[in-house]
Amino acid sequence: MADRIDIILDTDNDLKIHNGDLLYGVADLHHVEVILISAPGAFKQHPLIGANIRSLISGKLDVSARRDIKLQLASDGYQPKTLTIDNSGAMVVEI
Image 1 (tube, one colour):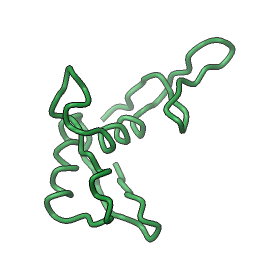
Image 2: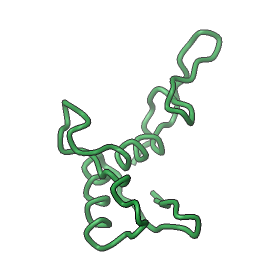
Image 3: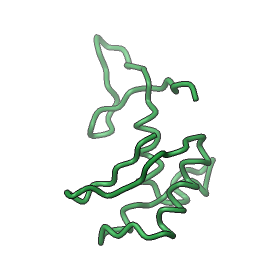
Image 4: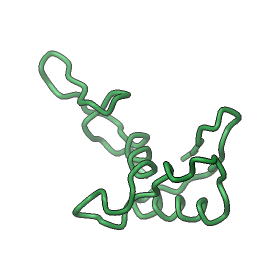
C-alpha cells in the first residue's frame, strides 16, 4: 500500500505549521492512531469508524477487542501485522 499524504499534526494533535504554512507528509501512523482512539460515531461522514481503545482501560486485549481493532483498521485499508500490548501498557500496532 502506498503511503498516505496528509496534513501533519503534532503530539497534541494540533496542526504543525512551519513558516506560516501547514506541513504535510506521510500520515499513516496518525491515521491509525485516530482510528484506534476514536469511538464509533465520532465521524459524521463515517459513523461506524472507530475502535474506541480507551474503553480497554484494564489493558486486556481479548479476542473480541483484537478482532474489532483489525476490522476498523482494515476498513481504512490497513492490515496490521502484529497487535500487542507492551510492558508499559501501551498498544503496539505494526503495519
